[in-house]
Length: 362
Image 1 (cartoon, rainbow, N blue to C red):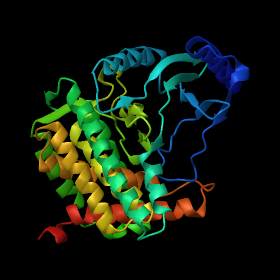
Image 2 (image 1 turned 180 degrees about the vertical axis):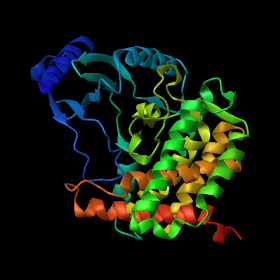
Image 3 (image 1 turned 30 degrees about the horizontal axis):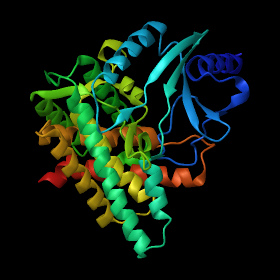
């Protein structure tokens, strides 16, 4: 029933927006379970492709109980507002129509061209080390990272940036992550050494200091990791995909994609290191990529949009989310994915200890 409804939804929109009949394209389920860093989705995603491989659009399937028709209506309005921002450093792949199918909500989302930043990093890792091509490829990778940083900074600054307190919805969401992490500490043996470390008091003090400072809030992505930023070399174009990750900050469509800029920045910055290590980049290369990102972002933004305290607080939240996400994978995940997940969790614990543990701060 669901598959039939999805195919009907695809056929109708392929005809309406692309003037194509079912014989002109194919529909396939996205399977990204072979790469932990390729923007893995919690929702079924279908790719609609022409027979030459050109991606026409994407269909994402949500439970109607988490994404209602009323929400989707407001979401489409907000997406149109993002389209009017006049972005010059990037485009944004946004949903352009939706449908309700019994207990499911279907959205059709514009396709991105080119290759994800994760894909560019993977390609670089496959080139023979120390060869002339290897150095040229890394120079290109630095340039792509700079373009990604400018694109994100422009998204953050294109709307009227608001100053004020972060919404209670976002604070409640962050508290949920922290409470669940505390539960893991008490019940998972691998985290026992952190139980009595004083980390929670330090984090709460950091949160209070961050929230007592004016936050800059604006349009944010929600998960600007390398799997969700595409670069089309032919057209020299950056495209941000999966902007719906901002839904994780709020289930109020009127607040869609509005959030603290510092969390978006931290996610992009720290994800460069995670993805780089997964592809075998060494520490010096990773630091070079992060430095290129930070410099380009700062240059594009033109002013400081967050404090050091806000960055430290959201860095902690980023790593807490990674522990929650990857501390235990489903049985059907491959041994390689489990290895990557273990590496992420190990690094997350080290980062949190570095920032929060009292014994490390004396």
